[in-house]
Length: 382
Image 1 (cartoon, rainbow, N blue to C red):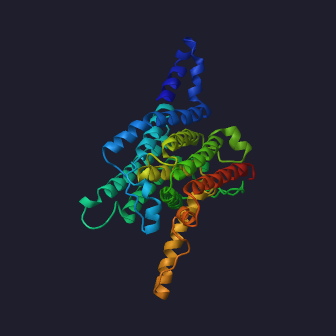
Image 2: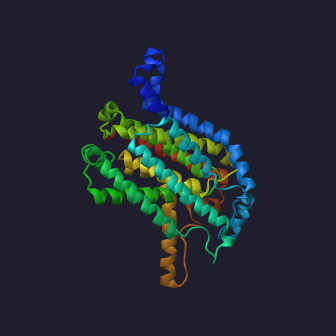
Image 3: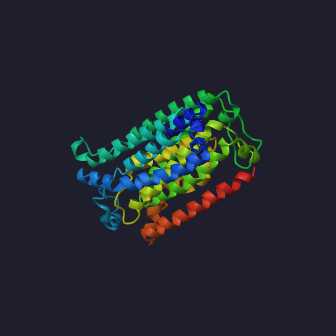
């Protein structure tokens, strides 16, 4: 809203006539993104206590139950901690975007749809888990298939509209490979939608699986968001894109505002989510954050970079896939299922190896920071 207001006042010379030309900074994406980090952080910090109190009043507390008795004992102290804290993150990201971003930008509009859609799916899942006793059968929350259908449906719709919007701009519908500056094959509609849907769905689920320890997902997502803030600025600013041999898609620069809002919201949420956590983001936050960063990577044509920057999320997701696949395979072959890890996702494996929760979280943060640094270092290695 501020962007459109300032742009209107600038174009009508109202700012110049009233000596307020300095307000034009709100139309520069670098300033918008920087302020987005600060504003989203402040909103999260300011609203956090009220949101926590409200969730407590609704008795929305985590059950703290696991499939293994020793993990139940290890995590017993978390029982009753308010979940669905993703409401705070979504609120901060949404409010910041509405205030600072260019709301006439197609990609911003689709990003908000992504945020709200996946936030609603996560909220439904969290709520059903908390009220499982009211449902028939022993199913907890949405089934994996139900969540997957909602994610895939969103991915197909968003990617189809995104391809249609950008199909007249070759850079907006090409596939870019890190390190190869002259290799960017154009994608047709089916391939663009297929790749985009896989990225959006995969990133949403990967962040969801990572959200298992105090501060782990929020801290890692803040690092990934910072890296994509920088990448979005590069893609959106012609001089930088040309210098670094990146695709130049000017409207995509607004994704820096979304990335900045995510970074600030995650840092503000981390204020309350650090060990011992006063609130959990739940599926409400993790599904929305993962899907949104996936959509940002699609818009700026850096899907493969997400695999490097978000390496922690990728490894966490693959640890679950490997564990489940190996268990089913060995059970079919030998009659007894065997496991690769002591427990999946991977962060619980290290807990069972003797690492404290804080050790796991901080070490994963450090790895995430190194991966983000490596990704940003590759922008000149084209």
